[in-house]
Image 1: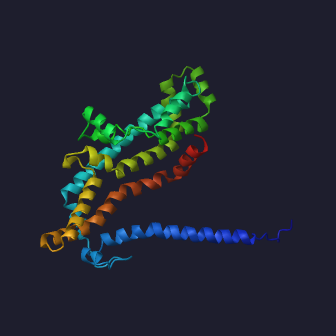
Image 2: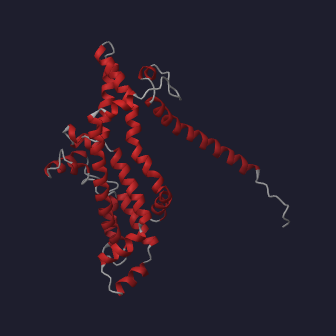
Image 3: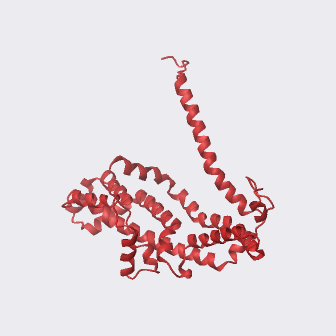
Length: 298
């Protein structure tokens, strides 16, 4: 074929590309606008935010919201608790998921298919809220950190993704060769499997850490003491104060509270989202690979 010949795309392909780009642009706008509004509102005068004057850019720029956060002990206590729950919970999740996924990936495990069937059934059936609460209560974990960690120590979806990674990305022949050389199962896991599993471990860390950071429902059920509240429950209290003040607008004290809560509500959202946003760039390159592994082979 001559070099100067240019192959033109069919008209149908061009129309398809235009539609895809338009849909992508609409989705980007729908996703980005709430984020931009929250950032602008966190730097704006709360009275102007309540009056609906803030649409895209900040109005009456002020740092009062962030100043209030720095001097609010409840927010910092919630921040500390959430960091502890996230770090400890993610560590437990990764350890338990590794110890369950690796044996299930080995073809020499007796009853492997039956065990996977039992594990998969937990994705569709559970005991329910009341039995789960009674179990946590009988174990003495109510109003403790472990009530937020132990019941969800292993995610079935993440377990299947990690098991599939071990099956598809780590050759069984390599493991057999290690056994022939006298390598024990524990040494094989620590010295061979884990170094080769850094991509999937990074993805699992992100999945579990984001889940712990955003979780509030379990804390709402099991945590009683305010000094153990995670940041999400503290933010919930701020929102409730704002709603209560909006109902009784004639009360001067409540009007001051609604302005105060409005000024820090958006700032808390920004501050609480920063650790997760900072984590994404480090594991982004592993994201697609980890998700595709679970979708190709389950």
